[in-house]
Length: 456
Image (cartoon, rainbow, N blue to C red; front, side):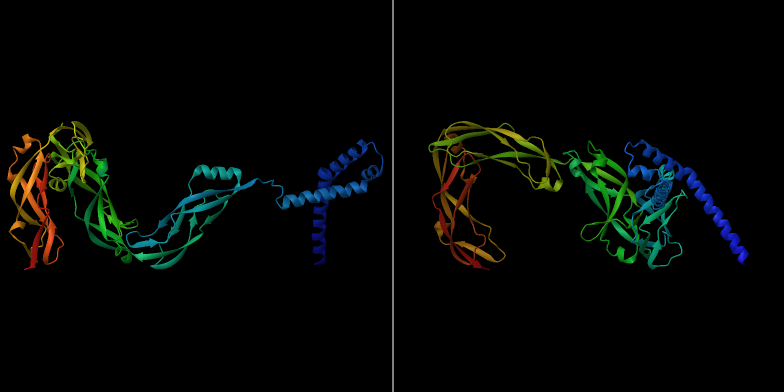
């Protein structure tokens, strides 16, 4: 045993002697010669000269330098191997599981990979681009599971770290339900202003939605998104849209992105029409003209306008009213007015109108015995009677130009009182009069009448 130990010690002794000779040859001796040369080069032959000429001191200095270099390399202060690292961010994570049987939640969309190694290997790794992060769930059952993220590491000479290295997921059994499809039309403002989508017909009325039970319970509706801009419609007609997107929404109208819809797209047939309606322009003077003057004619350069919009909106519009300010007017005047587009109307054939107003001397004419009507009475609860005979009729003075007054009939004038929001009893209400010709002014000689309101 002692002989073996002696042989081992002798063997290691030879190794250390060899290392010393090698260091002496490549490091200590050259450094000693270099320092010695420096010493000779210094003119001042003092203490430094003696130190530098002392062979023992030179050996010690060389040894200290050698040990310092060794430590620097060992501690990687000096990097002789050129090792670096790179980060591959947002690498997609692929799932390996039975998609028909399970739903997985809690999986991040991507992860980061830190690669460490030589520059050449890192460069090759970046060029290959074959980096894959996977979660293998094939042998796992339903419930909460903690799974390691795997990396394929195409360059085996590189070290790596993955973030996240593992994830906690929940595996649910997949179920399915049938849901009725509805439509949601978007980008209607991109459609030609004279066109409207009148109907949409889908190639199927129901779809299948798939996920876990609790997720399906949050689905309030499934809609086919009809993009009017994708129709490229320039005229009325029937258009077909393929690959129409289907979207699931919750009760608040928020899209639920992780619901599987089968099929995921459908085909829609869209009917586009151009409903329109011609309505007259009704010019209404606002204010009182100057005393002694009256409006003789009101002449717009256009008599009517064609409106485009939904049928239901068009049905509710009978005229296009344009107001002009005639307060204090005593001579002829021309008005330039923009036409206000009614709510729900997409387009109009005209957007402005020129109105000429001519003035003449004012005259007046009186119409007697215009009957008074009751308006806005809740007839389901109440009935109304005039307080006396004088409260059933009024005399009306009409002012304007003689040519218009001569054409006016008593039947063209109406008198009324507003009985809305009145309680049972005897009340005094103002009389309102108006006529068919807006160029004339109408004034009742009786301003207030008494009305008796009684419950039925």
